[in-house]
Amino acid sequence: MNPINNNEKLILFDGVCNLCDHSVQFVIKHDKNNRFKFTTLQGETAKPILEFFTIDTQRVDSILLYTPDNKLFTKSTAALKIAAHLYFPINLLSVFLIIPKFIRDFVYDFIARNRYKWYGKKEACMIPTKALKAKFLE
Image (cartoon, rainbow, N blue to C red; front, side, top):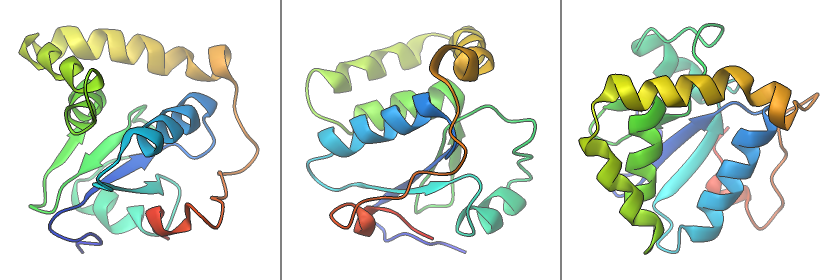
């Protein structure tokens, strides 16, 4: 089931969400060590991971971070763990992991519930350029 190498992490995101798309573009821009691969929650690569962890994409408004040791992080934990692997000063955001998860996720859920209203929604998932294609799994 593991679609990534030992030194990579896989970010699963909502492929039709503009905020999610901008977040992915931000990570790509700041992922100088190429630690991350990407796939949409709607894609084929995500299906076995979502099934294994019993994630219902109709009920989950979250970015997911899948690691080679078969761990899955969701919501604010996923976002902050992603930030931890980016360069200074972005990696400083990981200090917010000390805040209890229920508080962090309350803020995360508020943004997630409103993301389509605030940022819009696409008709279809993003199609990566040729230069970025290697970062996306499908």
